[in-house]
Length: 324
Image 1 (cartoon, rainbow, N blue to C red):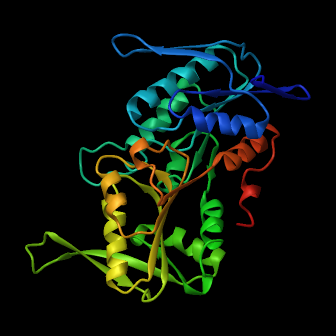
Image 2 (cartoon, rainbow, N blue to C red):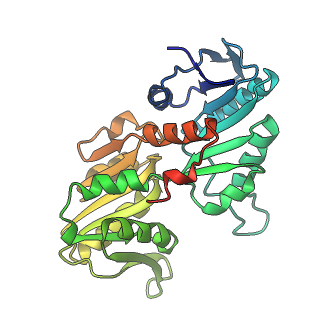
Image 3 (spheres, helix red, strand yellow):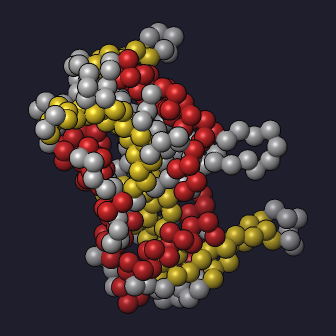
């Protein structure tokens, strides 16, 4: 299958870095194109070399790279690939970032700290990106860091419809793991017609200000609770929130997140958790040691492919989510 798709006088080309080739192939299949053959390798000192095997002159180019571990390597490879497309006279360059690296560093909490999420956006723009397409950014403000169009896609319809098809909705409660996720959790409530609960974290002042106490706001006793988050990294916060729900009488807990970062002790924490199911998208590759029966991975490829198609055809990406 060729990596080129034409519509009238326009030509689409689809490229992928080496971070998550399975997702790239799935998106290309949805689009009815192939991934453009690319020669890429590391020199002995770690420098990255990239060369495309087909001409990109005059093409609308879509380049996917999800920022998985080792994250700095894959961001650098993506920047090099953008630069190569710019120097190959691409008509436009849309950078697809299913998981946007450094998204948690989106503001200064203290003096002398960087805003690394802004730096990543600046680097992409300098390299030659015209547009960014991302899935469930950690905070909405990251869209304003890039000087150009940013298409922000949502996995909520995919995740919510899956969960809604498996459980008794009359017993369902949507739970935000902290105050920052309430807005997203509220959209889940609207979609599934379920009530909302919140896990609130505070410091226990009676134990030297060191122990975190999880308070549950809302009725969870005897309920099937769905904890919703944008990402799970080491799993400590979400598993502690699940424990708090069980302690308050929850019948069952399901955890959903768009991005399964799953680093460090995540494997042991998820394996030993009382949570019945963890549901992620394939925005990031799932580590082999986490191929557990309680982990479900849903494909985000159709959602990304639909957005790519709208961008290429000068359509509306927003219309994909207007009724969600």
